[in-house]
Image 1: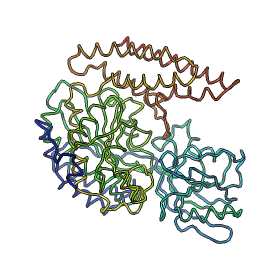
Image 2: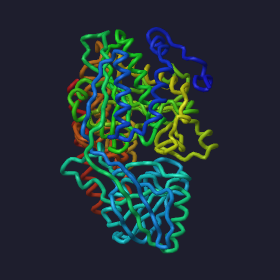
Image 3: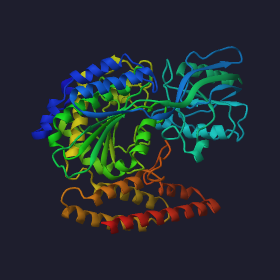
Image 4: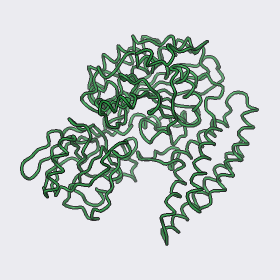
Length: 576
């Protein structure tokens, strides 16, 4: 296993990097995994509070400053579901999801064919409603999908009685959440964004039965029970002072979610263990850190759509906006057989050098660049804080041999992610040690670097996306490209003359990150739905398919977006 985990044996590092990695061990992290494997850490429960108490007890022992918060979060806990056809057949595997409506609905079962291959997580998160009538009252719509958030919102708007998702897992559907509202609780004037629709999911085998029933014109009764309410939940924040440069008033945030579905060993007990070990090791090396390191364990990830990290953003907005240079999301490390870093790693362009360099230096493994999705606890996009998630992966060939389908976490382990079977045998202490070495060193390097984030890389990524959009239609994005070229030249000059990491560079990175990932305000949250690169300009790709008024309306929208982006880039250049 060690030779699989490290391409050339143990990592070859020197100096402080070597000392930090050498201090990472399996003893403390695996002890936490064993304890958390005994707890069902659904947010707001006694088991989640026990997990938080374990973390604070160990931090106390290590001498790490920490605080326990108990925020009130808007959570939705699913309890049960049932699906029964009019001839008396009952689905054995039915489950509901967080933020499903509670109650009972009846209707004609209508099957909508999805991508039969279901060969990507994107395919399983979408359903096309083409061909369905605009009025779906009296209908229960069913399709192969995990949680098609956009489709469910449209189904609710069109009067459907319920949605039934057929999951690819043979024995049970994966747990999930249906609201597009990031953080669970919507702002007052967006309350209608939470879809009022009954949702139930079934296994692949039950789905086969239901497809046959739909073909025969069956009617079904769907019931679901959820508790959606404000609950208090524990949030642990540890702080490690960077003592090497007292004048530097910045910090790096390492974080992961404390709650889980069931035991949730790979999602995310192993991540909680890595965070604890990271805090222990960096506390002993605080004299080598330039920036402080904040380490956070979030509640409300699973039943609140990242409610804990969203609360944190709201409560610590100014500190994050002014002082946080980067964040490191630790989710699903330490999964058995997760030897590679080629598919599930995600980071933003500004922190590319730290991400790629750390993986190579610790593991000797090759990696690939992937854009972070609007998922996980990337609750910092609107503030513009660049982030990374260096999740290892079970090799594709191994997953294919085992018949795994795509899943959103657990290193691709389809028999673990969001299931009752995410138990301790799905994790491996050796993999956890290697992954913790990577995360700890990446966090330390962000803390220690003169320039932790690179605005030039962020500019180049924006320019690449805008150039692609410019070629997609006759709409002229040349003014945006010209401004990006001018900003790149000015930024290169400023960085060459800078001593350390100037405030202007940090502000620039944050604004570029916002342009790349969000449309809403800095202190808002974009919805939990896919965001194309430079989302203000992305609709240009739809223009060639439109004509008449639709084309004119989109051109108007794009003109205003282009003006806004150009003005933003120009202000950034002048601020340098």
